[in-house]
Length: 107
Length: 311
Length: 90
View 1 (cartoon, helix red, strand yellow):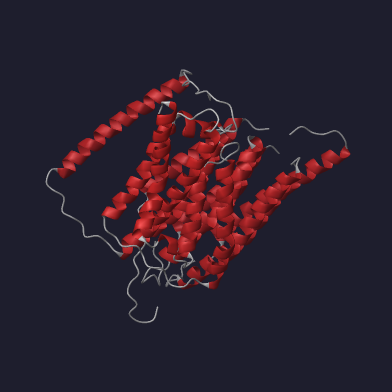
View 2 (tube, rainbow over the protein chains, first blue to last red):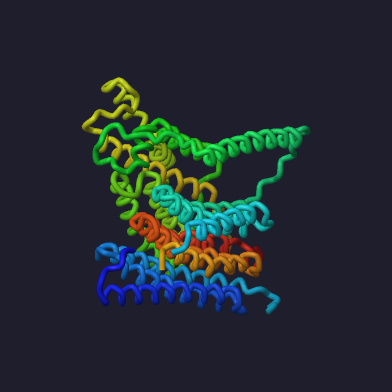
């Protein structure tokens, strides 16, 4: 990615970097939740929120690097699709999780 | 910023580990999920190898079709377990010999391929003879230079379907009504999938895309619709199912034969009409392949129990 | 941050989630792993695309985002809807 001259380009690069780093952080947070939370439902809840946010931040960070508005538009569309699917699937999985509660609750 | 192997090494290692786990894990459902994850990572690896069309096919088939197909078949197997047939005497020993022979042959093949890679003897790159709108090299190879192979591939899929039909399982009836959240999801996603499938087909000549990818997305749309409680009435009649499934191969074959009469060689495209012929073949193939995948999905579903009491 | 570095960081961030696949305890937990890897896969393909062929990466990411729901729905409607699946197993 060739750096363009001028202060504006550097600001965009810095912003992009922060957004990408934040995206990775949220994905990691989601993984931690998946491994450490006590219960399927809490894991589901944390995972969907963290993943969608992480993806959105990464999409935003990558969009700042695009040269054409159409490219940024596709990136946004990708995130919107992921978001659209995640809501209903999360709700459906939640229904399954509520029914599947293990009879003996180990920690 | 980082060397290529810093990413590719962990990717390859993770892939190998996943493959090992898929084969070793006891629980079949766990193996299925591992397989889905494996497919996702494989798509990433294809991108790393600068093969976006293959990555696209892997992503579409792995994410959309194979995962659902596996989970569905697993549920079907558990709902209708087959009685184990007693194996004839000597069968176990014979199958072990066969497996051993196959392993040796595959190991030799892999050694040869690895040596070729190490000694840097790349296979010759096929050159597109006629320039046109067909700039996508993958499509050019699949539909022009190696079109015969692709024709046979479509036939293989139809044969797989016939194999399943021979087993005589009836088509699963439409499942019970889907929850509201799912119905809404289907209403939004299926049209988008159909449009994207069409775009992949149309773009296959110039950009990333093609018939297999478009078919996988279309099949995923059909599978999602089925899972969402839609019964896909246009697939109900068995003759129509068979016709749709076989149409791709039949059309491909017909074009080949007609071209043989016109230009003298089987599937030898005339200079002017190549791009449109390829698009036509791909379009019919997309519909057929999607039909095959969706019908395969339905044929391996758990059959509807007759409603005894309250669902 | 190069695309490759981003991809590596993402991989490191989500790969440990695979452990949940072994622990379970319910099948919904295992399906969550598939969902996590699905979202991460979209980000991964975008990152790898940025380091190689951006248009290819975006197309693959689009397909992944579109189709990732299908296996989850198959799980809910087929695996979790099996008769007698009131408890957790698998």
